[in-house]
Image (cartoon, rainbow, N blue to C red; front, side):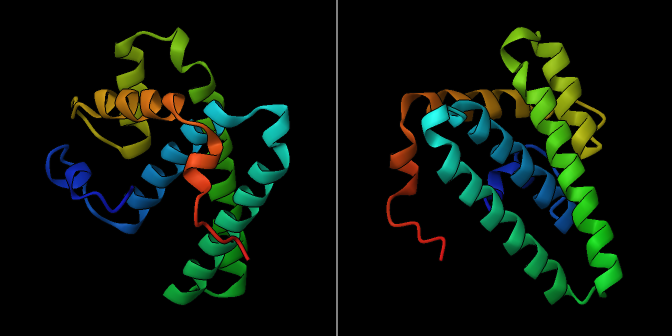
Length: 140
């Protein structure tokens, strides 16, 4: 979903590794918010582990050294958990606070209508079950 050109062209988000990663983590946080049921814990843990393992491999491919990778991964994990914490209360905060939240993670100064985008994404997640997103996904 972070490859969606609409996010960068229509919403004015600069297309770079950092913003793609933040957008991925925001999408991922909504995904976890919707599907964090007890019966999904094992598969969600596998998805979480796989995603961050792939992120680490991507950082290695960019050419960072081992020490830099460890620091970056710690930063990305902390960022993800911060986003999850904020997204957890998404339904309880008003649209202005939602805008501030999204803009703060992407370093944006004005409303790019990303709240509407993420509300649509969130509603779409709620309409489906976890298995509908896992079809033909292999985490091996």
